[in-house]
Image 1: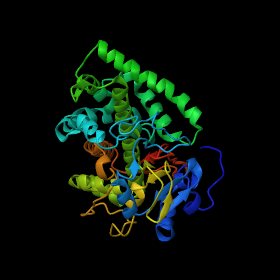
Image 2: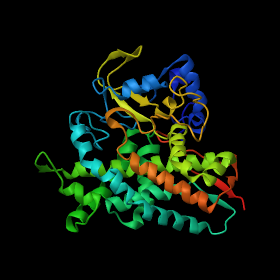
Image 3: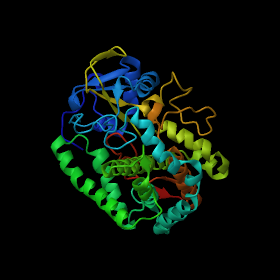
Length: 402
Protein backbone atom coordinates (compact mmCIF):
# COMPACT_ATOMS: atom_id res chain seq x y z
CA UNK A 1 0.00 0.00 0.00
CA UNK A 2 1.40 3.43 -0.88
CA UNK A 3 2.27 5.93 1.85
CA UNK A 4 0.14 9.04 1.52
CA UNK A 5 -2.41 11.01 3.50
CA UNK A 6 -5.56 9.08 4.37
CA UNK A 7 -8.88 10.28 3.01
CA UNK A 8 -10.91 12.51 5.32
CA UNK A 9 -14.00 12.87 3.08
CA UNK A 10 -14.56 10.57 0.12
CA UNK A 11 -16.97 13.05 -1.44
CA UNK A 12 -14.26 15.67 -1.98
CA UNK A 13 -11.03 13.66 -1.71
CA UNK A 14 -11.72 10.06 -2.72
CA UNK A 15 -8.94 7.57 -3.37
CA UNK A 16 -9.68 4.07 -4.65
CA UNK A 17 -6.36 2.90 -3.17
CA UNK A 18 -7.10 4.23 0.32
CA UNK A 19 -6.93 1.45 2.92
CA UNK A 20 -10.54 1.99 4.01
CA UNK A 21 -11.82 1.79 0.42
CA UNK A 22 -9.72 -1.31 -0.30
CA UNK A 23 -10.96 -3.16 2.77
CA UNK A 24 -14.68 -2.37 2.45
CA UNK A 25 -15.84 0.18 -0.15
CA UNK A 26 -19.57 -0.54 0.08
CA UNK A 27 -20.43 1.79 2.99
CA UNK A 28 -18.46 4.53 1.23
CA UNK A 29 -20.47 4.14 -1.97
CA UNK A 30 -23.76 4.04 -0.07
CA UNK A 31 -22.85 7.29 1.66
CA UNK A 32 -21.88 8.94 -1.63
CA UNK A 33 -25.13 7.92 -3.32
CA UNK A 34 -27.04 9.64 -0.56
CA UNK A 35 -25.21 12.98 -0.40
CA UNK A 36 -22.83 13.33 -3.35
CA UNK A 37 -23.65 11.08 -6.30
CA UNK A 38 -20.52 12.22 -8.19
CA UNK A 39 -17.48 12.45 -5.91
CA UNK A 40 -14.33 14.42 -6.77
CA UNK A 41 -10.66 14.30 -5.85
CA UNK A 42 -7.57 16.34 -6.68
CA UNK A 43 -5.49 13.17 -6.43
CA UNK A 44 -4.16 11.70 -9.66
CA UNK A 45 -4.35 15.15 -11.19
CA UNK A 46 -8.12 15.35 -10.77
CA UNK A 47 -10.78 12.63 -10.96
CA UNK A 48 -14.53 12.03 -10.61
CA UNK A 49 -16.43 9.01 -9.31
CA UNK A 50 -20.14 8.53 -10.12
CA UNK A 51 -21.64 6.28 -7.44
CA UNK A 52 -25.14 5.81 -8.87
CA UNK A 53 -26.34 3.44 -11.56
CA UNK A 54 -27.70 6.39 -13.55
CA UNK A 55 -24.43 8.32 -13.42
CA UNK A 56 -22.28 5.32 -14.30
CA UNK A 57 -24.58 4.34 -17.17
CA UNK A 58 -24.73 7.86 -18.61
CA UNK A 59 -20.94 8.28 -18.74
CA UNK A 60 -20.19 4.71 -19.83
CA UNK A 61 -22.40 5.12 -22.90
CA UNK A 62 -21.12 8.60 -23.80
CA UNK A 63 -18.22 8.39 -26.25
CA UNK A 64 -18.70 12.00 -27.38
CA UNK A 65 -17.55 13.62 -24.14
CA UNK A 66 -15.32 10.86 -22.74
CA UNK A 67 -12.33 9.01 -24.19
CA UNK A 68 -11.19 5.48 -23.40
CA UNK A 69 -7.62 5.92 -24.69
CA UNK A 70 -6.41 5.13 -21.16
CA UNK A 71 -8.53 3.14 -18.71
CA UNK A 72 -6.17 2.71 -15.74
CA UNK A 73 -6.10 5.78 -13.53
CA UNK A 74 -2.63 6.95 -12.52
CA UNK A 75 -0.59 9.99 -11.62
CA UNK A 76 0.40 10.74 -15.20
CA UNK A 77 -1.67 11.92 -18.13
CA UNK A 78 -1.37 10.11 -21.46
CA UNK A 79 -0.92 12.59 -24.28
CA UNK A 80 -2.25 12.14 -27.80
CA UNK A 81 1.36 11.49 -28.84
CA UNK A 82 1.77 8.77 -26.21
CA UNK A 83 -1.62 7.14 -26.73
CA UNK A 84 -3.23 8.49 -29.87
CA UNK A 85 -6.98 8.24 -30.12
CA UNK A 86 -8.86 6.41 -31.44
CA UNK A 87 -6.54 3.38 -31.04
CA UNK A 88 -4.97 3.68 -27.57
CA UNK A 89 -2.51 1.28 -25.96
CA UNK A 90 -4.62 -1.89 -25.66
CA UNK A 91 -7.41 -1.98 -28.25
CA UNK A 92 -10.32 -2.35 -28.27
CA UNK A 93 -10.76 -1.37 -24.60
CA UNK A 94 -8.62 1.75 -25.11
CA UNK A 95 -10.08 2.58 -28.50
CA UNK A 96 -12.62 5.27 -29.31
CA UNK A 97 -15.00 5.23 -32.26
CA UNK A 98 -14.73 4.61 -35.12
CA UNK A 99 -11.65 2.39 -34.65
CA UNK A 100 -13.17 0.64 -31.66
CA UNK A 101 -15.73 -1.29 -33.71
CA UNK A 102 -13.02 -2.59 -36.06
CA UNK A 103 -10.73 -3.67 -33.22
CA UNK A 104 -13.52 -5.34 -31.26
CA UNK A 105 -14.64 -7.26 -34.33
CA UNK A 106 -11.18 -8.85 -34.51
CA UNK A 107 -11.35 -10.53 -31.11
CA UNK A 108 -15.06 -11.38 -30.82
CA UNK A 109 -14.82 -14.72 -32.71
CA UNK A 110 -12.28 -16.04 -30.17
CA UNK A 111 -14.69 -15.29 -27.30
CA UNK A 112 -17.91 -16.52 -28.93
CA UNK A 113 -19.94 -19.16 -27.02
CA UNK A 114 -18.78 -22.10 -29.17
CA UNK A 115 -15.00 -21.67 -28.83
CA UNK A 116 -15.35 -20.85 -25.14
CA UNK A 117 -17.55 -23.87 -24.41
CA UNK A 118 -14.87 -26.08 -25.98
CA UNK A 119 -12.47 -25.02 -23.22
CA UNK A 120 -14.59 -26.51 -20.43
CA UNK A 121 -12.99 -30.01 -20.24
CA UNK A 122 -9.48 -28.63 -19.88
CA UNK A 123 -10.71 -26.08 -17.33
CA UNK A 124 -12.20 -28.83 -15.17
CA UNK A 125 -9.03 -30.91 -15.44
CA UNK A 126 -6.93 -27.91 -14.44
CA UNK A 127 -9.14 -27.09 -11.44
CA UNK A 128 -8.86 -30.65 -10.22
CA UNK A 129 -5.09 -30.61 -10.63
CA UNK A 130 -4.97 -27.54 -8.41
CA UNK A 131 -7.30 -29.12 -5.86
CA UNK A 132 -5.17 -32.28 -5.82
CA UNK A 133 -2.30 -30.18 -4.46
CA UNK A 134 -4.25 -29.57 -1.26
CA UNK A 135 -4.70 -33.31 -0.68
CA UNK A 136 -6.08 -33.67 2.85
CA UNK A 137 -5.14 -30.19 4.06
CA UNK A 138 -7.38 -28.69 6.72
CA UNK A 139 -6.84 -25.10 5.55
CA UNK A 140 -6.35 -24.02 1.93
CA UNK A 141 -5.58 -20.63 0.46
CA UNK A 142 -8.45 -20.46 -2.01
CA UNK A 143 -7.19 -17.14 -3.36
CA UNK A 144 -3.45 -17.47 -3.94
CA UNK A 145 -3.33 -21.25 -4.39
CA UNK A 146 -6.52 -21.82 -6.39
CA UNK A 147 -8.48 -18.92 -7.88
CA UNK A 148 -5.47 -16.98 -9.14
CA UNK A 149 -4.07 -19.89 -11.20
CA UNK A 150 -7.21 -20.65 -13.20
CA UNK A 151 -7.56 -17.57 -15.48
CA UNK A 152 -3.85 -17.26 -16.38
CA UNK A 153 -3.68 -20.92 -17.31
CA UNK A 154 -6.65 -20.53 -19.65
CA UNK A 155 -5.40 -17.28 -21.20
CA UNK A 156 -1.90 -18.74 -21.61
CA UNK A 157 -3.28 -21.59 -23.69
CA UNK A 158 -5.43 -19.25 -25.79
CA UNK A 159 -2.47 -17.00 -26.59
CA UNK A 160 -0.04 -19.90 -27.04
CA UNK A 161 2.43 -18.71 -24.41
CA UNK A 162 4.82 -21.00 -22.45
CA UNK A 163 3.31 -22.91 -19.54
CA UNK A 164 6.22 -21.83 -17.35
CA UNK A 165 5.19 -18.18 -17.68
CA UNK A 166 2.05 -18.36 -15.52
CA UNK A 167 3.73 -16.58 -12.60
CA UNK A 168 4.95 -13.89 -14.98
CA UNK A 169 1.36 -13.26 -16.09
CA UNK A 170 0.34 -12.65 -12.49
CA UNK A 171 3.23 -10.22 -12.09
CA UNK A 172 2.23 -8.34 -15.25
CA UNK A 173 -1.36 -8.03 -14.03
CA UNK A 174 -0.06 -6.69 -10.71
CA UNK A 175 2.10 -4.08 -12.45
CA UNK A 176 -0.73 -2.87 -14.66
CA UNK A 177 -3.55 -2.83 -12.13
CA UNK A 178 -2.22 -2.50 -8.59
CA UNK A 179 0.69 -0.05 -8.93
CA UNK A 180 -1.32 2.81 -10.37
CA UNK A 181 -0.50 5.18 -7.52
CA UNK A 182 3.24 5.06 -8.20
CA UNK A 183 4.98 8.04 -9.84
CA UNK A 184 4.60 8.01 -13.61
CA UNK A 185 8.33 7.57 -14.24
CA UNK A 186 8.33 4.40 -12.12
CA UNK A 187 5.31 3.08 -13.98
CA UNK A 188 7.04 3.63 -17.32
CA UNK A 189 10.16 1.84 -16.07
CA UNK A 190 8.09 -1.13 -14.85
CA UNK A 191 6.48 -1.47 -18.27
CA UNK A 192 9.80 -1.91 -20.08
CA UNK A 193 10.17 -5.67 -19.32
CA UNK A 194 6.43 -6.14 -19.95
CA UNK A 195 6.76 -4.74 -23.47
CA UNK A 196 9.92 -6.75 -24.05
CA UNK A 197 8.12 -9.93 -23.04
CA UNK A 198 5.30 -9.44 -25.53
CA UNK A 199 7.66 -8.50 -28.33
CA UNK A 200 9.58 -11.73 -27.67
CA UNK A 201 6.34 -13.73 -27.88
CA UNK A 202 5.46 -12.07 -31.18
CA UNK A 203 8.90 -12.86 -32.60
CA UNK A 204 8.58 -16.48 -31.47
CA UNK A 205 5.17 -16.81 -33.13
CA UNK A 206 6.48 -15.30 -36.34
CA UNK A 207 9.28 -17.84 -36.39
CA UNK A 208 7.06 -20.71 -35.21
CA UNK A 209 3.43 -20.15 -36.28
CA UNK A 210 0.77 -22.26 -34.53
CA UNK A 211 -2.96 -22.49 -34.11
CA UNK A 212 -3.56 -19.96 -31.35
CA UNK A 213 -4.91 -16.47 -30.82
CA UNK A 214 -1.51 -14.78 -31.15
CA UNK A 215 -0.84 -16.27 -34.59
CA UNK A 216 -4.38 -15.35 -35.60
CA UNK A 217 -3.80 -11.71 -34.63
CA UNK A 218 -0.50 -11.64 -36.49
CA UNK A 219 -2.12 -12.89 -39.67
CA UNK A 220 -5.49 -11.16 -39.61
CA UNK A 221 -5.98 -8.17 -41.89
CA UNK A 222 -7.66 -4.90 -41.03
CA UNK A 223 -8.72 -2.89 -44.07
CA UNK A 224 -6.42 -4.94 -46.27
CA UNK A 225 -3.31 -4.74 -44.10
CA UNK A 226 -1.88 -6.89 -41.31
CA UNK A 227 -1.89 -5.36 -37.85
CA UNK A 228 1.25 -3.51 -36.69
CA UNK A 229 3.12 -5.57 -34.13
CA UNK A 230 2.68 -2.92 -31.44
CA UNK A 231 -1.08 -3.17 -31.97
CA UNK A 232 -0.95 -6.96 -31.65
CA UNK A 233 1.05 -6.57 -28.43
CA UNK A 234 -1.57 -4.15 -27.10
CA UNK A 235 -4.42 -6.57 -27.80
CA UNK A 236 -2.49 -9.39 -26.10
CA UNK A 237 -1.83 -7.22 -23.04
CA UNK A 238 -5.55 -6.48 -22.85
CA UNK A 239 -6.54 -10.14 -23.14
CA UNK A 240 -3.98 -11.25 -20.58
CA UNK A 241 -4.53 -8.53 -17.99
CA UNK A 242 -8.31 -8.20 -18.39
CA UNK A 243 -8.70 -11.96 -18.39
CA UNK A 244 -6.65 -12.72 -15.28
CA UNK A 245 -7.20 -10.36 -12.36
CA UNK A 246 -10.88 -9.81 -13.03
CA UNK A 247 -11.96 -13.46 -13.07
CA UNK A 248 -9.54 -14.44 -10.33
CA UNK A 249 -11.18 -11.78 -8.17
CA UNK A 250 -14.71 -12.90 -9.04
CA UNK A 251 -13.94 -16.56 -8.24
CA UNK A 252 -12.24 -15.61 -4.98
CA UNK A 253 -15.07 -13.31 -3.87
CA UNK A 254 -17.61 -16.06 -4.60
CA UNK A 255 -15.73 -18.57 -2.44
CA UNK A 256 -15.28 -15.90 0.26
CA UNK A 257 -19.06 -15.44 0.28
CA UNK A 258 -19.84 -19.15 0.41
CA UNK A 259 -17.38 -19.64 3.28
CA UNK A 260 -19.50 -17.24 5.34
CA UNK A 261 -22.97 -18.29 4.16
CA UNK A 262 -23.46 -22.04 4.69
CA UNK A 263 -27.09 -21.78 3.58
CA UNK A 264 -26.03 -20.57 0.12
CA UNK A 265 -23.28 -23.18 -0.07
CA UNK A 266 -25.73 -25.94 0.86
CA UNK A 267 -28.15 -24.84 -1.85
CA UNK A 268 -25.46 -24.89 -4.54
CA UNK A 269 -24.33 -28.35 -3.43
CA UNK A 270 -27.85 -29.76 -3.41
CA UNK A 271 -29.22 -27.75 -6.36
CA UNK A 272 -26.49 -27.72 -9.04
CA UNK A 273 -28.90 -26.30 -11.62
CA UNK A 274 -28.96 -23.11 -9.55
CA UNK A 275 -25.33 -22.35 -10.35
CA UNK A 276 -25.86 -20.17 -13.50
CA UNK A 277 -28.31 -17.95 -11.62
CA UNK A 278 -25.99 -17.78 -8.61
CA UNK A 279 -23.10 -16.74 -10.87
CA UNK A 280 -25.05 -13.67 -11.96
CA UNK A 281 -25.68 -12.69 -8.34
CA UNK A 282 -22.00 -13.20 -7.48
CA UNK A 283 -21.19 -10.90 -10.39
CA UNK A 284 -23.69 -8.28 -9.29
CA UNK A 285 -22.90 -8.29 -5.60
CA UNK A 286 -19.12 -8.65 -5.88
CA UNK A 287 -18.46 -7.05 -9.27
CA UNK A 288 -14.68 -6.66 -9.33
CA UNK A 289 -14.03 -4.02 -12.00
CA UNK A 290 -14.05 -0.23 -12.07
CA UNK A 291 -12.98 1.38 -15.34
CA UNK A 292 -11.32 4.66 -16.24
CA UNK A 293 -12.24 7.33 -18.78
CA UNK A 294 -10.77 10.72 -19.69
CA UNK A 295 -12.78 13.92 -20.09
CA UNK A 296 -12.32 15.18 -23.64
CA UNK A 297 -12.88 18.90 -23.00
CA UNK A 298 -13.90 21.35 -20.28
CA UNK A 299 -17.62 21.04 -19.62
CA UNK A 300 -20.41 20.95 -17.05
CA UNK A 301 -21.66 17.38 -16.84
CA UNK A 302 -23.99 15.80 -14.28
CA UNK A 303 -23.76 19.04 -12.34
CA UNK A 304 -19.96 18.92 -12.18
CA UNK A 305 -17.39 21.30 -13.66
CA UNK A 306 -15.18 18.76 -15.38
CA UNK A 307 -11.86 19.74 -16.96
CA UNK A 308 -10.13 18.31 -20.01
CA UNK A 309 -8.16 15.17 -19.10
CA UNK A 310 -9.83 14.75 -15.72
CA UNK A 311 -10.15 11.08 -14.92
CA UNK A 312 -13.51 9.36 -14.53
CA UNK A 313 -13.59 6.24 -12.35
CA UNK A 314 -16.66 4.30 -13.48
CA UNK A 315 -18.04 2.53 -10.42
CA UNK A 316 -19.75 -0.49 -11.97
CA UNK A 317 -19.69 -2.31 -8.58
CA UNK A 318 -21.31 0.73 -6.94
CA UNK A 319 -23.97 0.83 -9.65
CA UNK A 320 -24.78 -2.81 -8.91
CA UNK A 321 -25.59 -1.92 -5.30
CA UNK A 322 -27.79 1.08 -6.15
CA UNK A 323 -31.30 0.59 -4.67
CA UNK A 324 -32.70 2.79 -7.44
CA UNK A 325 -31.75 0.08 -9.93
CA UNK A 326 -32.10 -3.16 -7.94
CA UNK A 327 -34.69 -4.33 -5.44
CA UNK A 328 -33.02 -5.26 -2.14
CA UNK A 329 -29.74 -4.11 -3.70
CA UNK A 330 -27.80 -4.55 -0.46
CA UNK A 331 -28.83 -8.20 -0.10
CA UNK A 332 -27.22 -11.20 -1.78
CA UNK A 333 -30.10 -13.28 -3.15
CA UNK A 334 -28.71 -16.47 -4.62
CA UNK A 335 -31.79 -17.18 -6.76
CA UNK A 336 -32.44 -13.56 -7.81
CA UNK A 337 -34.71 -13.88 -10.84
CA UNK A 338 -34.21 -10.46 -12.44
CA UNK A 339 -30.59 -9.41 -12.56
CA UNK A 340 -29.53 -6.88 -15.19
CA UNK A 341 -26.22 -6.17 -13.47
CA UNK A 342 -23.40 -4.15 -15.02
CA UNK A 343 -20.45 -6.21 -13.81
CA UNK A 344 -19.24 -6.49 -17.41
CA UNK A 345 -19.69 -2.80 -18.12
CA UNK A 346 -22.03 -0.85 -20.35
CA UNK A 347 -21.98 0.60 -23.83
CA UNK A 348 -19.53 -0.19 -26.59
CA UNK A 349 -16.85 -1.33 -24.14
CA UNK A 350 -18.93 -4.04 -22.49
CA UNK A 351 -16.55 -6.93 -21.74
CA UNK A 352 -15.92 -9.08 -24.81
CA UNK A 353 -14.78 -11.94 -22.58
CA UNK A 354 -17.96 -12.30 -20.53
CA UNK A 355 -18.62 -15.83 -21.86
CA UNK A 356 -15.16 -16.92 -20.75
CA UNK A 357 -15.46 -15.28 -17.33
CA UNK A 358 -18.81 -16.90 -16.62
CA UNK A 359 -17.52 -20.34 -17.62
CA UNK A 360 -14.36 -20.03 -15.53
CA UNK A 361 -16.39 -18.93 -12.52
CA UNK A 362 -18.91 -21.74 -12.91
CA UNK A 363 -16.31 -24.47 -13.38
CA UNK A 364 -14.03 -23.19 -10.60
CA UNK A 365 -16.85 -22.99 -8.05
CA UNK A 366 -18.46 -26.28 -9.11
CA UNK A 367 -15.22 -28.21 -8.78
CA UNK A 368 -14.32 -26.60 -5.46
CA UNK A 369 -17.66 -27.35 -3.80
CA UNK A 370 -17.73 -30.82 -5.32
CA UNK A 371 -14.42 -31.53 -3.60
CA UNK A 372 -15.25 -29.55 -0.45
CA UNK A 373 -19.04 -29.37 0.12
CA UNK A 374 -18.64 -27.68 3.51
CA UNK A 375 -16.07 -25.05 4.48
CA UNK A 376 -15.65 -21.77 6.35
CA UNK A 377 -13.23 -18.90 6.68
CA UNK A 378 -10.25 -19.99 8.74
CA UNK A 379 -9.15 -16.46 9.73
CA UNK A 380 -11.63 -13.77 8.66
CA UNK A 381 -9.31 -10.94 9.69
CA UNK A 382 -6.43 -12.46 7.70
CA UNK A 383 -8.24 -12.06 4.37
CA UNK A 384 -6.57 -9.42 2.20
CA UNK A 385 -7.99 -7.54 -0.79
CA UNK A 386 -6.34 -6.21 -3.92
CA UNK A 387 -6.02 -2.48 -4.38
CA UNK A 388 -6.72 -0.54 -7.53
CA UNK A 389 -9.43 -0.91 -10.13
CA UNK A 390 -9.99 -4.65 -9.72
CA UNK A 391 -11.15 -5.78 -6.27
CA UNK A 392 -10.98 -9.33 -5.02
CA UNK A 393 -9.60 -11.39 -2.12
CA UNK A 394 -5.95 -12.37 -2.36
CA UNK A 395 -5.00 -14.21 0.84
CA UNK A 396 -8.13 -16.29 1.44
CA UNK A 397 -7.62 -19.00 4.10
CA UNK A 398 -10.52 -21.44 4.05
CA UNK A 399 -10.97 -24.23 6.59
CA UNK A 400 -12.31 -27.46 5.16
CA UNK A 401 -15.03 -29.07 7.30
CA UNK A 402 -15.13 -32.84 7.13
